[in-house]
Length: 302
Image (cartoon, rainbow, N blue to C red; front, side, top):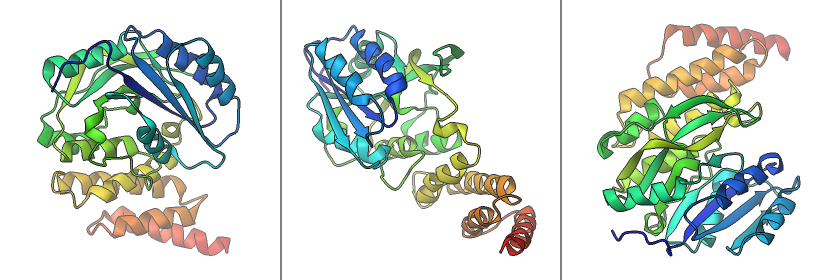
């Protein structure tokens, strides 16, 4: 793999849905990059706020290419990122969510890793920040993992965030894309697909991403997150690269949590989770207890 030159273009892909509150700061972190050869492509996924105004203002103060793609209907983050991949012109792809921030050396450091380690994609470390931008946890670094072990390790603990991925464009030339069927965990699924295709990542030992967690983020909902994230585990139960026992155990745990949290107030939701759990084969006796409780509760609500 050739070494990146400062003149080689990086396509920065930003999906934006109700993102105007944070997008300005995100774009400022792009403008501050020490790597100057970049283009920014923003996909406004459902036109609901002042995202276009923020993008227009940013474009007016840079000579770099800035393009806004739009859909008046919310199509989901996977379709948004896939449309951005199709429109990208760069030799490298850098993903950035509309509420996250990069340190000024994020691109330069990531590309240096690709060059020195001769890898196809890189994974950055991160700091957690809150809605106001204050750091709540420092230096969360990715775990160096052999490629063969990466899919199972990620299912056990997903330490990769989309905004920390920088990849050579050739990685996506064979058709690898985000799965539109996944509403949560599509980034984890993409990383498993990259590993399946044999693309070795670099693991940064520096935190160059500020990942924002706020009350409306998908990871903040204690029921929706495991309910929808479990679809990733269901998808990869038959993946030969994944330890099936580990995958099944984690899947059952998530679905059991959903049933436990919902059987009183949303018994039909609990029953839906338990149906999915029962399809995995063996299950804990407490799943039957939750089934009986939810069935009784659902019967009284009809």
